[in-house]
Amino acid sequence: MRRQPRGDTTLDWDVALAHRPQPQARAEAAARLAECGITAEQVVQVLADGGDDLFAASRSGDPQWADRFGGPLAVALLAAEVGALTAHLTSRAAAVRATAVDALLEEFSAVSVAAALGVSRQKVYDIARAQRMGPFLDHVPWSRP
Image (cartoon, rainbow, N blue to C red):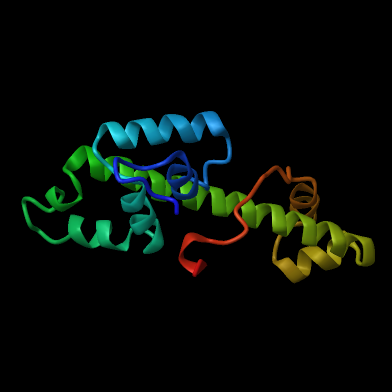
């Protein structure tokens, strides 16, 4: 069991905010969200649809569109988590690309790799040297069973 009847456990926030790999950043985000009345489950739900529901509500024309999410502050915090997740996924994709380009350079010239990727030769070297920091999520939130 991961839930306690009196509130979210640390594990719940760790799961909901797994895209924030630094424990301090995750704890600070969890505190901001909880202070606004947002639960870990709400964060998981918003991330599961990539913010689609937030976006649709914001474009609905309903003057109270933010109320069902907890108000404008809650929406801003939830949208920030969608942004943090997408930034994390962008970094993860860049790390994968860097690893692949580095492997390509072991077999092919930078000119050949550049032509195949549609970038300049210098960009190939920039990509290959990119930081491959982590840790990264193994799975996006919407692919988990």
